[in-house]
Length: 166
Image (cartoon, rainbow, N blue to C red; front, side, top):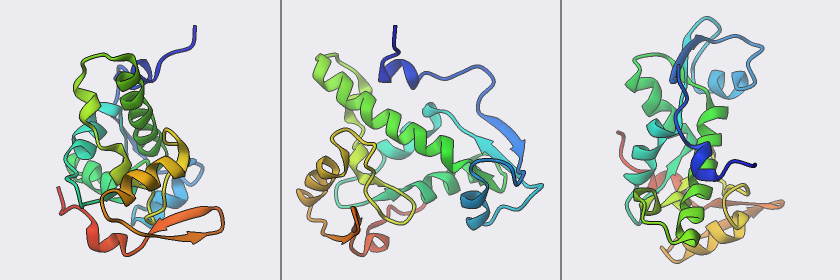
């Protein structure tokens, strides 16, 4: 039987895991772009570390995957965070929130404002529930505006709306 989104966000033994960054890592380019180099320590996170960051974003503010990774690297006192796993958990959490809402369950995760978390460069996430269009509508309701870039949408001046550091 296929796992639910809520089941997918459950912590796994042995995580978070600290690794030494290698060029062959799938997240190498993104982590390197944020300042980590080969041989630096990076963290492979889990959902329980991403939840408090996403929950803390008030209306009118935004969070990107970049800020999530910087906060997690800082938390572990290391140079970087795997953007791939952190991004997977933002998507998993967003889908888990909507899964819980549609099931009628009473859960703390239903309070996660997932739509306020963007990709690294302020783009909407097409892997969130309802795709970019649903995220766009929720952000428009909070006063944000967008510029199209091909099939993608970027929040205009997203940097001015980023949550203060953690």
